[in-house]
Image (cartoon, rainbow, N blue to C red):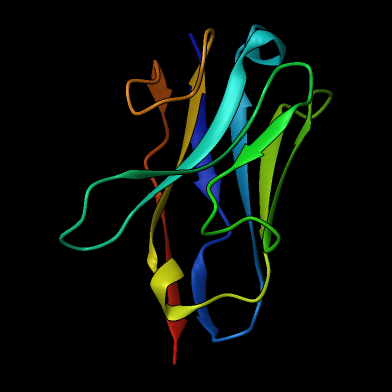
Length: 119
């Protein structure tokens, strides 16, 4: 089983940066694909970025070029560096893990961390 805990959210001004961290427990972490999703008030949860167990990365076009996802298999963490933040990035950000692919039906989820971008 994989247990996920997110941290690093907060309030930031437009154009600012934040770095989210997802700490994963469980020895099988390094074999899992990891991803970040977000959910804004009144909206569906949506994909942000994913990193495979081998290190390949994929981004939603809304964050491409501004966000970077990385993983540290020695520390069992996956980070999301968010630069040039916009008001529309305001949401609760969730970390997800799955053995096959990180989708909205991922097997494991964290509790979420709030990101608020003020204009």
